[in-house]
Length: 215
Image 1: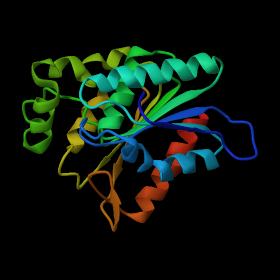
Image 2: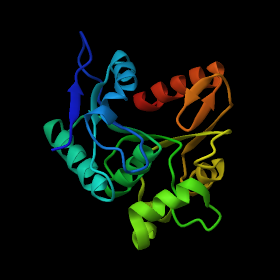
Image 3: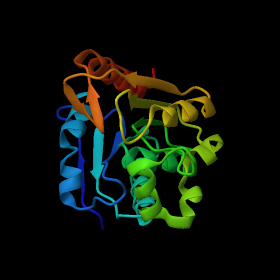
Image 4: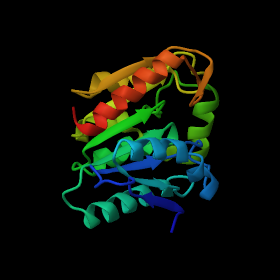
């Protein structure tokens, strides 16, 4: 079983559950990868949510782990509001999870690759996609099954991201009715594959909180 940390918010009944999925190019795996997301999980718990901060297997098998975690959490609390937060590869898995499990309540995907067959992609991301998914890359492209996603989706992409271009988010936003696209202005704070200004980060966090609350 992949390493996971499931925690309740302190001093209150959880408003719901947030699954937290790390980045790492679909190759990073191990307790350390999940532990790197602890500050994110703590923030969600401060907002009143139970968190499931989890690792997943490298490669395509990661989707099996993410689906199994969601099914387990949903079975434990069938009436819970369950949202999924992921960064980069974790955001990619979050979107595929929402496509395959229509009762996911919301998704927050940061700098997520969504069009794995884009001929203009190129660069390091295209190389990694080829290494990880090979000829099956089209089967793991969230954009191709965007119509399956029923959950509200909050997308965020960095304007200075040299790995996942903003155009990926723009295409997914266009394909998802009711989605929200946030473009992060560069600044002094490290953010996924690039940077963010303090103001942009604060605005994103506020949007994340309202997204989780369903407002």
